[in-house]
Image: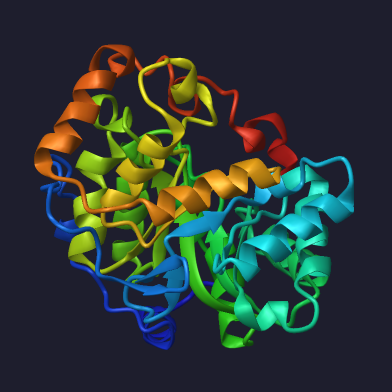
Length: 345
């Protein structure tokens, strides 16, 4: 069925959404946000820092657990122990996706979040379906794997093509399934992710505004090289901040190609992303050593001065110029839905 304007406005109101002006979604050529000022307001509990997720009011850990990496340990119990350790140390933002390891990451997380752990976690997962039928199927499968009656945040995954927003918001598109699931109490908040080009993100925000819808969150690459090449930080981030949409940073280390440039260290990468007005910086760790590295980044984080930020950007400027270390932007290597078009429906 096709949603009427009134129904979409009602759905937006249900999410606590305030419709952004269409013009705001078209502010493409904005300068980078001024750095050197304190990052988003945060509170400290134990060894973890927490920030507010946009207009939702939810408090999320400044570091989020990456869902793909949690499915990498060959032994399922090792993955479950990592999730437990992360939550015990204060990480409450759990990233995942319907397609990670053919559902294996969600299954592991579902097992790990039994008992009191579910109440301590803010669970996000993503779906690939672009049609209402495929999106509905994937939402229900994710709920079953996660062994939960609700998902805290559901995001449209891999918005990497200019036509993706049109397909999602079309009559019979995925947005109808997501809004229906929200009305049914299966999901709480709605967002989208993508890693290809800031122009595609701007198109998604524009089409949402045309349909009187405002997303709760947006996930995108934010790292020490992004500012130099097809920059999400420069083109998308100011619009999200202006409209109080929760910012989820990913690929802080280029998964992990930025580290292979030998220009910056892991904790510098995390600090840079944390210094932006991100709600959470999602990072992958498939072993305790990498978990400790992420926690060390939190312990040692201090808002960076403008000079410190500029020094990092100067170190990466030459290597970043052509996107050769941000392969998720310049190649199809990270485009899982391109390799599996049937997931789109």
